[in-house]
Image 1 (cartoon, rainbow, N blue to C red):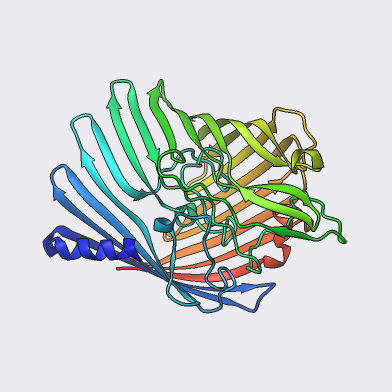
Image 2 (image 1 turned 90 degrees about the horizontal axis):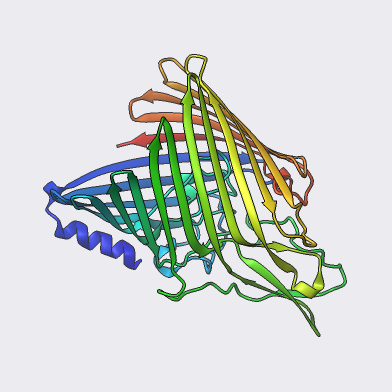
Length: 424
């Protein structure tokens, strides 16, 4: 609540004439195969103010209420998230979160953004490769929009305007990691990370999250260029992988699992260019240390490997008000090992988007196919603008595959929903 109190004090201190406000109200009703229904309402308040010609501040506050909450039951402890970045659970159904809170300061040849914010690297649809600056909330798996599921974190974001392009430098003392669904929640991860015999007892220790301000900080830089029609970036990030590494230990009482986090260096690049009705997009990423579960008991159940990943996407807009997009994702482990996953892991995506009635009606289909395990996620949505600030939408999410696969584990969580959004 301290961050929310800071926002209120700042708003009181500023003159009313300096503040600009906007609000988004949303109501959502979901029907699922595994539960009768879920209701969610949310309010999003955005405040912005120009302090002087060279500085401004922005704050975004989000409140959500759940009528039938199995997404975050029993007010989860949020041990994966740093205290100043956590959601405030006011009771069993109501939560309050300071989504963003930052100051912008402009200089002659640079711009500085200080505070709680989102930074987006990469441009892939549906899945992520280079978009690793902010951790993600997996309470609804990957079904929320990325802008809503990213966990905003506290950082220093300095952008320098060079003659050849823009250089972004990041210092991130916030040690928040991915927020995974709680045990018993609708989207709890149930696909096994290890083969545990049914007669072997096991236990989990509490997650060990790094929490030192300086030595556990992440640092990164990105250089953005435009050369001969190509939008190019070169990226580097020294960071903790936001997914926990679960070490296994044999004890007299059975198996003991200890979740923790490990460092890695990420080197990457992106490129995109338009060729008539086509846009070609590509991302590559090299991770120095990717920690992967194994079936070998002499490695604590985990082994490190260098990893190379890439995305190639082609967008086509040759039909009026229509976009077709296909993407190929591959992750390749470069070292040999007794891994529980394939050394080459492949996903394919298809996105189709169509507008009708002067862009008042928007239809979208997104399909993700995991080639290795043949499991899938199909997402359908339709949004209609009744007025300039009132939108009604319908959506459906369908999972398929075996119960021990990425998407198949949620086969009983297929859902249909309706959403109403009102901007004020």
